[in-house]
Amino acid sequence: MGALQSEKAANGAAALETQSSPEDFDQPSPLRKIISVASIAAGVQFGWALQLSLLTPYVQLLGIPHKWSSLIWLCGPVSGMIVQPIVGYYSDRCTSRFGRRRPFIASGAFLVAVAVFLIGYAADLGHKMGDKLEGTPKVRAIGIFALGFWILDVANNTLQGPCRAFLADLAGGDAKKTRVANSFFSFFMAVGNVLGYAAGSYTNLHKMFPFTMTKACDIYCANLKTCFFLSITLLLIVTVTSLWYVKDKQWSPAPGEDGEKAPSVPFFGEIFGAFRVMQRPMWMLLIVTALNWIAWFPFLLFDTDWMGREVYGGKSEGDERLKKLYNQGVHSGALGLMFNAIVLGFMSLGIEWIGKKVGGAKRLWGMVNFILAAGLAMTVLVTKFAEDHRKVAGDYAGPSSGVKAGALSLFAVLGIPLAITFSIPFALASIFSSSSGAGQGLSLGVLNLAIVIPQMIVSLGGGPFDALFGGGNLPAFILAAIAAAISGVLALTVLPSPPPDAPAMKPTMGFH
Image (cartoon, rainbow, N blue to C red; front, side, top):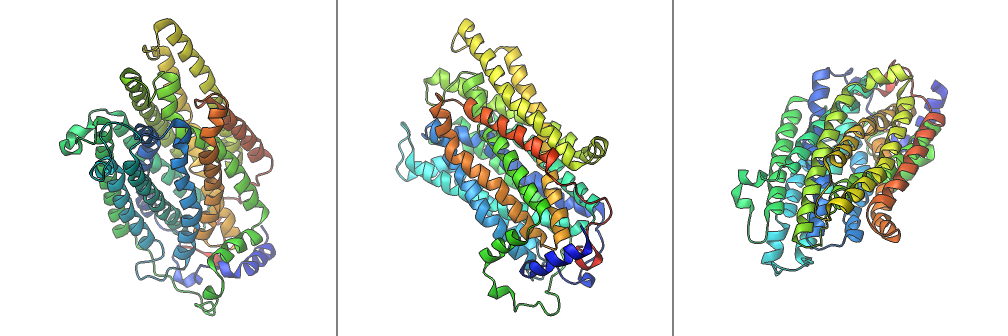
């Protein structure tokens, strides 16, 4: 992008200029500091992995029907749509002596601890407030669970946005280092996923903390509590260590831009201002990202439910044998997600090298979206084989070893496109926003809208859409496969290539 175009964009986005003058920021930070901050993703993703693998089945066990269970996930994208842009906006402008990003990261970790307590003890608190031990729905427990779920999603958005913006600051505007930082963030997300899914797949984890099992909280619930205790412990360790080790320099407005303009522009005016001055590369990135997440979210939301229902043939609302099959499928799905996370971790470390071999980041993203489309379409074939096996072996037989292996292999293969989804869009957003002069926090918050709006669509329509075609999870998966294919085509054809590996910004726009 030419200097004149960058200057024009920066002038048009005067309210979005959140960086200080060059002397206020250092050069790109050492890799060890970038790795330290990126490690926070392991703690965040441990809890997120538990959400994805265990909470959709758990809320059905509390009494919410399958076709409405996706609505509980609506809180995530709604909070993300509001919270992450706000957090990004204020973290760009934070003048705390502890720095711009660290106060928000610390606050997010505290909120995670509160949310974990509410979710883990929802059944116990609901029983004390009047829920009966037998019978569903457990209305009070569901209310407490939903409150904890809301807080957890707010906390995750409070953590992840500033973490990624902090990494962009530490990269100092260097395009290659920005991609490397996001690759390490993706790698540590994979580490957290492996730990979370491994914990979720182990059925006797509650024995570590025997007090977790109570009259109102059965083995499944006790395992969930124990998993969350381990999650918050890891998160607090990596967060405290990183915030102590990596200093976040106090920010102050550049001369002539101190505090006079900020109050005159309402926050949502800043958001609309970001869209008004957004240039074509960022618009194309938002479109591809939105389609990509329309593809991903149905699978991330219903993958373990798919294992419990379609692959294992169980039901969360059936008799005891069907419930047992369903729970076995859910735990098997968590094991599959662990394999997915292992592949994701190794893939994350090779993104930079593979991207060079295939001709760039956008080409790599486009190619793996076709892998995603094929993988989602394969769920239909795995389901058909599982149904054919039950016709011969009986309704309570569970899947054959071949069907189980096929399903787990599918989980593993999808770790390849997921690694790209967790890395390249955020790296491109940092690079494109650096070229246009917008603040990293706000720009990543705007990108988050392209993630959470598709999630809202899936949360509202996923369950009813599946019910429209006879129930189950396959209709949403097929629609997701189509979205993935379209996303791949657009990534290859309309998404601009990022700037070369030279520093993405002039010194006047540098980060530390």
